[in-house]
Image (tube, rainbow, N blue to C red; front, side):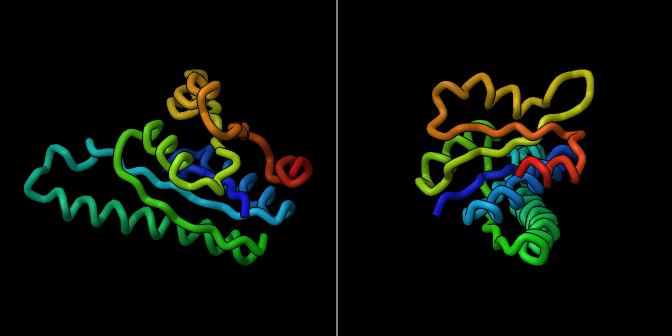
Amino acid sequence: MRKFLVVLDDTRECLNAMRYAALRAAHTGAGVQILAIIRPEEYQHWIGIADLMRTEARERIEAHFEVFAKWMRDKQGVSPELVIREGDPATEILAQVKSDPQVGILVLGAGTDKSGPGPLVTSMSRNSGTLPVPITIVPGDMSKERLEAIT
């Protein structure tokens, strides 16, 4: 089964990327894989408690994931899977795409502030010519109604 890979993070635009991935998956019979990435610098400075901080980060991710997963299951009939990786986001996204041949499309949300679409969209766009899958970039300020209309 083809999967939409969407990145879970704390950005506002993540919500539209999740919606888009779920709606497209529901309409096309595909799956959704949600990738959360723990950056090493989140706990690097606290060597003595690194394991505790890593565990807490995973717990936050799982709680955040469950909110999206419940909505996807209840409203779209899609049961997403969660993948948690540690490292640089762009590197880990590429590694996940390469490790799962069912991933067919990477879905990213674009930021809406004046500084640009965000570091992840910028980084992945620069490497888009060498990615093994297409990227869908969802505008962060697109309305829910518009998203539903285009999916």
